Image (cartoon, rainbow, N blue to C red):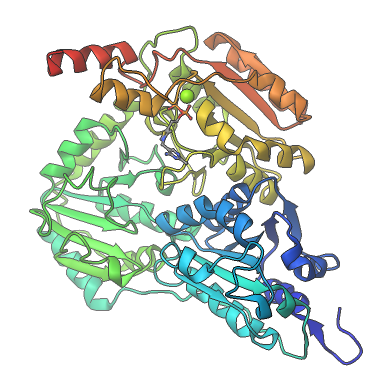
Length: 561
Ligand SMILES: Cc1ncc(C[n+]2csc(CCOP(=O)(O)OP(=O)(O)O)c2C)c(N)n1
Ligand SMILES: [Mg+2]
């Protein structure tokens, strides 16, 4: 609160900046190092979610950044808190998500003495963030926080870390609030769009690959309209399936892990590849094998909001420095050629996608996770939000779930385990009316399972569908491939996950047979509590197509052991 002289503490100025920039939620684990900022939240209108571990808090903020396109915000304390948060910062970096982490820091006078819990934030977070800084003077809070919002969202979005010396937060200053930030749009030039149209008119078999961040509901609709007008096949990159309606007649499938071989063949055969929004990292390039480096054989168009990503690995024929939001809007000006030569190919691409994802095959064991994914696809509302972390269980989401709406999948393209539960907490907290489902593995869940307590504390009824196969399945799969039969450090002795849910004050139920899932899921929803539906999955069912033993046998045969 302002005192009579109009002064505010650094903590108050800071929280008022968050309000000015439109922040509605922050996620934190408290620390004595930023008590003055915490106190400022006491009588201000921002929802504070207190978490159980900073990794959870940072992932919640990252999920908010993914969902809204505006910086998610978290608060952590000094060395132990900030370093616990690092996986969330790393995800924001790799996934190009706007995020701001404020960190309580030792008082200014103690800096550089390695005071209690002191770390050098610029050195530790320098390579993970777009900007790591410290506020020395409370009067400069409006300036620096405004820059943090602009930096996190502009160009290629990413994380920003701002350290807050404890004594700076209690200083009293008279200073004006910053005006609200506006994310800076990055537009394609008129000549870019003209050149793109020319390339399209000359093409025989074009394909568009979409991913990355800086999309919006409007861009989602524009890209679908553009694809429809030009009958252009569109594939989505790893964990960005929600960027295109899976039942749109132009949808060609998911270019992630374990993609449809027909999709790969189609991309290889294309004469024009238009990549929109995504970095050309390991996933979209299928381990840097899909296109020649540095000069792709196909005519190659790369559209990205970060200029430094254009030409980073692949030298595009046409590089367009634009955010997907602006690019999708500009596409309204592209005219189709007189004759669309690839129309039949697009129809076949979509048929191939439907066939590839239609029905799961049989699986070892009594619980067929493919059948359960099919049930979810048929019974969840189209706007349900699926949150997931990393592990082989996610292969069934990518293969069988059909995302129909914008931002209905919140998952780490960075492949970080433990993301699903915090993401689900954040999604349910900011979208209380939406159905939220977390899909987790047993290993994955326990990396941030403690945030189930946060879900109970805030009364956030989402369902965790937890696939318990008693192994770190992904690593075991690779282990059997590379070192068949030599099992080490991939087996897990698990708790009773249904009892875990109940012990936290949630609802828990164990499913032993596929057919029991529907009733168990209904009971979980009916409970009105955060819930875990614990699936006992046979470890043999490690991929949608190949069992663990088959992988081992194949390795033994090919290695001649
Ligand atoms: C934070 C983190 N640590 C380790 C890994 C390496 N890793 C990838 S998948 C995986 C196992 C996942 O196990 P689980 O969640 O049980 O899923 P499953 O593969 O069994 O379906 C591991 C250890 C990772 N991706 N992220
Ligand atoms: Mg597992």
